[in-house]
Structure formats: C-alpha cells, structure tokens
Amino acid sequence: MHWKWAAASAVGWPVFVRALQWLSEFGPASQGRPRWMLPAAVSSIMAAQVVTGMAVSIIERERSKETFAWLRTLPVSDWHVVLSKFVAAFVFCLALGLAWVLALWDVGPILTLPQFVSAWCVTFLMASFAILCQIAFSGRVAVMSPMLVVFLVLTAAMPILSSDQSFERMLALWRDPATHVWVWPVCAVVEALIVGATYVSFHARDTHSLVK
Image (tube, rainbow, N blue to C red; front, side, top):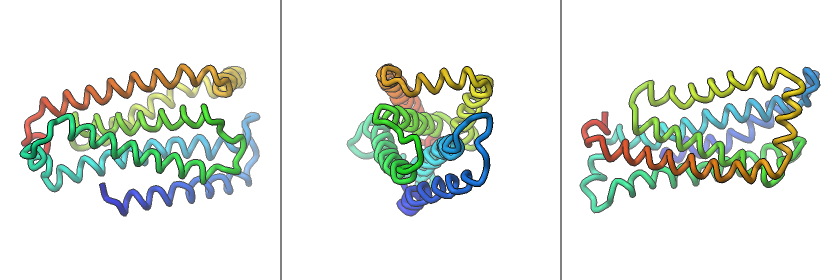
C-alpha cells in the first residue's frame, strides 16, 4: 500500500469530520434530528469511500508492478496472498477507527463501546467487500461495485429515515446493547464468506488475468 496515501487518509479523516461538525453548527437541526447527525452520516459515507480507496490501492499496486506473478513463484499459497490483503485492511481500519474517536470525541452523543464495535465491524466489512471486488473484477466495475452497494443501501434506507416514527425505532435499536450482540456474529459470518469468496476468485484466476 502507498504509505503516503494511507497517512494522508488517517490525518485527513479527523480534519474532515471536525470541519463538517463545525459547519453543521451554523444550520438548524432539520425534522427534529440533532445537529450531530450530519457529520456522523456524511463521515460514514466517507468511510466507505476511504476503505474502497484502500482496497484499490493495495490491489492495483500489485497489478501495476505485476507482483502477483512474482508472488506465485514464491513458496506461499494463495491463502497467504489473500489473507495478507485482509490483514492490511484490518490494520488500516484500526487506524481509521482511532481517527474516528479522535474526530468525534466531543461530538454528542458519544458512541458507546458496543456501538463503536458495530460501526467498526461494518466499516471493515465494506473494506473486505471492496477487496473481493478488486480480485473478482477489474477496471471500473471493481471500483464502482462497492459504492453501488452503499448507494443501494442508502436508497433503501431513505423511506425509513424520512419517517420520524421509524427513525425513532431505528435509534432505539441502535441504543440497545442487545442489538449489537447480534450484529457482531452476523458480521463475522459475512466476513468469513467474503474471505472465502475472495480466495476462490483468486485461486481460480490465472496469473495473466490477475495483472490485467
């Protein structure tokens, strides 16, 4: 991964969220939503973009330097290659989570530990899905697929968020610690499926197709 790009993302993340939170103070809270909703919602979308960019970086660097071919000449299995990408994503998302805490430490309401873990798990899933798309596809399809999923999820959620009653129900679920106890194993199962699908895709492709 380009370390300069990773460092710029980690530093730029708190700066962006703090600036967004500062700007949101100048506008009224709309439809009864608190002002912290704007920086929290938009920064969540930005998180999806950042982790997608991370996936593009760690895979496209291999393609541009054609090191996938070199890796397959080494005494390492395809599992080692695939898992190394997810380990890199894991470390990057840990740094991203730390940046999130630094950016929102005084913006209420502060995330509880279960809420933070759930938010981090979903972000890591997004990063993992982006890696899968980079391995399984190429070109614009690989880049656009994760963001298309985010767009479809947000589109499906709009009717729920537009209703004050539904919004309050979703907020109550989010504040209930029991909800997050169910979120974590679901995320773990989905993550295992993504890793498995990535390995199958990588193992099935010949070296020539991987460097295209």
